[in-house]
Image (cartoon, rainbow, N blue to C red; front, side):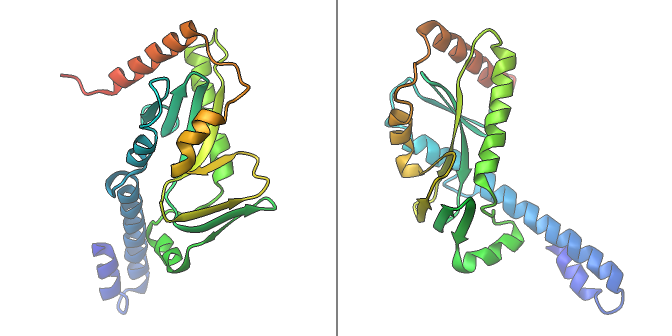
Length: 210
């Protein structure tokens, strides 16, 4: 913000320097807003996801900010990468294109408010990251990796047509995890225990030393 102010003050006498300060200020404000939305503003994505998954049994466990993808659910069906999207308003997917009716909130994207972008492509990347990681740590096992786009705001309306990946609101995530894998064979008890052990080690390694 200070750089923005300096840029305005020097704009008449040193225009090039003013543009530099304005650019620095804008980048700083954008980054600060992004970090606030991601880690500070509540409810954060991890809090919302934890809350909506509370009703599931102990076979489901959420890991936020421990694995190659920010949010991953481990279950008896493998690993599920989640792409959490905080957008409000009406979101549609039709004909291979996303549309977001956000009204005045679109202006906030100039200052770091996250844009919708292409969450299906983002999800494909996240699934790829998790698949690569689990293949390295459990090369002898074929752990299924799936993915879901989750819109976390209670003020979102989701309308999708022929979307090649799964997308739900946070209110529907638990039901998707219970019903979305019907017909798929679950992991054996031994594999589940080994996967759980590895995930526990990842969490323990991330904790600060005493």
